[in-house]
Image (cartoon, rainbow, N blue to C red; front, side, top):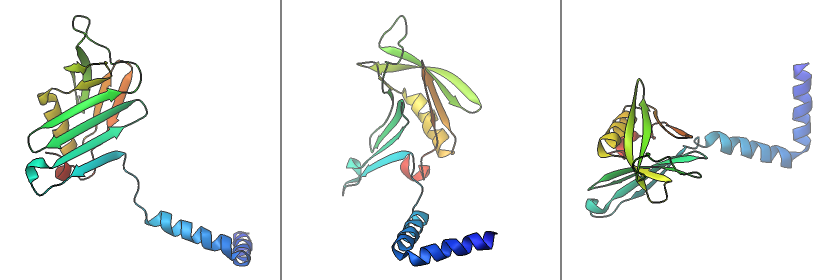
Length: 161
C-alpha cells in the first residue's frame, strides 16, 4: 500500500517537474537554514573599543527585556506594550517586580520611567540577571499582569559583559 502511494506520488512529481523542482528547492533551503532566535542582537564595533556597544532584546507580544552594553556601562530595562506597570502606592516613580531565577524568587523595587511602561533594573538586580544568563538559566520577570520568561541569549559569554 505504502509503495503504491509512493509510486503514484513520484509519478505525479515526475510529470510535473516545475512543482517537483520548486518543492525540492524549498525543502533544501528550509533544511539548511538556522532556527530563528527569539533574541534580537545589534552590535556596533568601531576602531576604538571604547565606542563599541551591544544591544540585546528579547520580547514577546506583551513585554520586552532590553540590555545595552558599552565599554563604560551596562543598563537593563523591562517594558510593556499596553497598560502601565503598577507603581508602589506610596511612590508612583517606583515599581515592584518579582525576579525568578530557579530556585530563587525575590521582590525588587525598580525605578519607573516616565509613562509607566518601562522600568530600569537596579545594578545588583542586573548583575544577577547577567550571571544567570551566563550560566544558561531562564530568568522570569513578573509584575502586575505581565510575565516574561527570558531564555539565555545565544553565545552569552561573548555577548554579555
